[in-house]
Amino acid sequence: DTAVSQTPKYLVTQMGNDKSIKCEQNLGHDTMYWYKQDSKKFLKIMFSYNNKELIINETVPNRFSPKSPDKAHLNLHINSLELGDSAVYFCASSPRSGAGELFFGEGSRLTVL
Amino acid sequence: GENVEQHPSTLSVQEGDSAVIKCTYSDSASNYFPWYKQELGKGPQLIIDIRSNVGEKKDQRIAVTLNKTAKHFSLHITETQPEDSAVYFCAARRQGGSEKLVFGKGTKLTVNP
Image 1: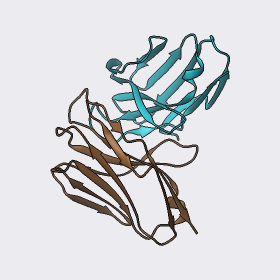
Image 2: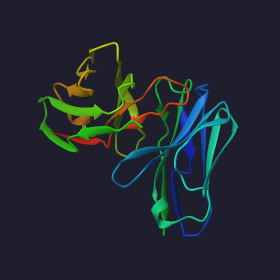
Image 3: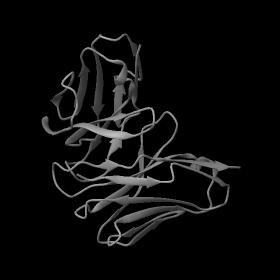
Image 4: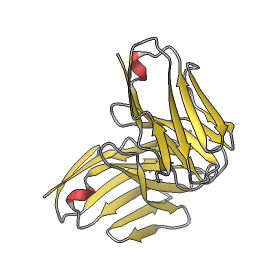
């Protein structure tokens, strides 16, 4: 059983399209995150949700919209995709906000052509 | 906000040698310092962490040291093995519900057999 699972693993799309990445955790954690890893491997937080409530919203274009239907799921929708959105997007969870180990999914590699 | 600097960006060692990766942080209120290992095609995984009330922590071949005064912490891997080859990230965080984990830019470690 995968603790943090995200789909799809690979996503190739054209500029201007809209796409979604889904994430689910079966660890019973309260907090979930989206991180972006660029081509230089730099990991930067985008969003954090605690019990479905948004608690961290970094300086991310509003084309990116996270949605948490329940505390086990955090999805990321991206509108009007741009070349610079190409990256690996990691979902993660932790037992509670601001504390404890982060458990990462295996990543979703988004390529915008 | 917190800023974490990590050095070196790449490190190549012979199997059996030791490897040391160093990080500095800017926020004196940070009190949690984890290290993550990211293997190719995988998400980062916690390998060891240290809190500000401890100066050193060891787990088998890996150890982390923390100097709060100088605001730097280091990862030491002894008796390196080829399977230690990966990208290693240090990170820092304050305690608190909305506090985010800030990552260094990563060190690509290669252990040559």
